[in-house]
Image 1 (cartoon, rainbow, N blue to C red):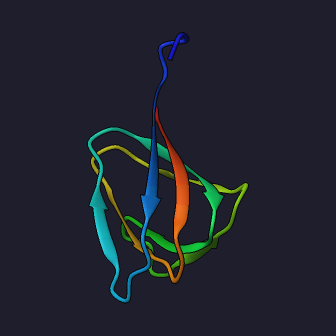
Image 2: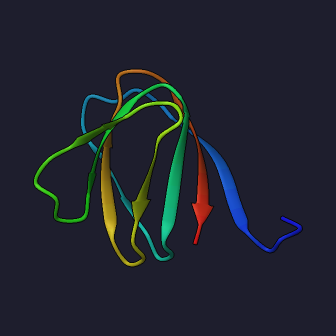
Length: 78
């Protein structure tokens, strides 16, 4: 990006089992469409995210994601 920020666009497909993602950089995922359940790091519970919401994942961490529908997102590397 002109301001030096790094972003990617992505799509999560529906899944019956949690998908585990590991991060090397801190990430903020902004939900554009669809909804998903996310468990970050060692948190005990999943939290629901819908369009207009975002969640933050620290660097060298992980998150688990479940979704029943297609979810479009923007990943902001921080």
